[in-house]
Image (cartoon, rainbow, N blue to C red; front, top):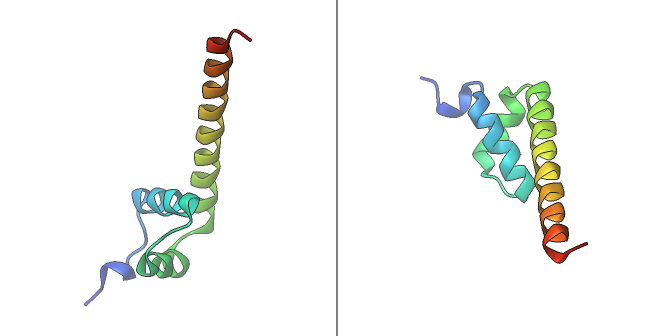
Length: 71
């Protein structure tokens, strides 16, 4: 009998784990699953994509605020 934690995490599970890691919180069972069954390359790639999206959003917000301020 296999537990859900014994399965390899899906791409969606990896994305959720990375997003929770950005916030600094995660359930211990997911943390254990990630380290036991996850592939580091998946987490690195999803993490880089997440950081790129975050930086792009910040740049767009700053440009919007500066344009509204007339700078």
